[in-house]
Image (cartoon, rainbow, N blue to C red; front, side, top):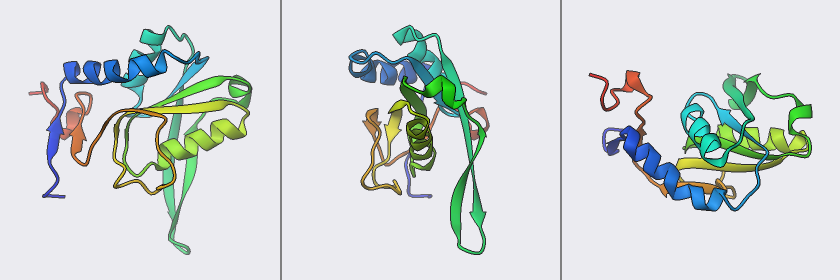
Length: 161
């Protein structure tokens, strides 16, 4: 990881990234936003505000390893009820698609509930994705860098000292 370039984003950087994807998002009529914790909460709220979407829900996904099979299975710690999703155009928001596990699993769960999922991230790491046949529907930038967002105060984000 030492050879990976770290990029520290400011709040203005985040607003610019969101502005990059807004024209694409504005072409759709989303009914609600699901923000994936923790990284998707801030951009999810900003995007919902810009799109005038009042329904902002949260998905919290954790992964535990099955020691016997060395597989990781999603555990949904928090997720909207199927009745909120059925028949809805759902915009799923996260800050970054790294390995893609969280957003792929949330997308599938929305689909199983009868919703029409769309995903948006600020940064897409296609080279690290565990899902070569999948990608976010919308993203602001593709990167290989280690991105540190301004809300990641414990990681030494800009403006915290």
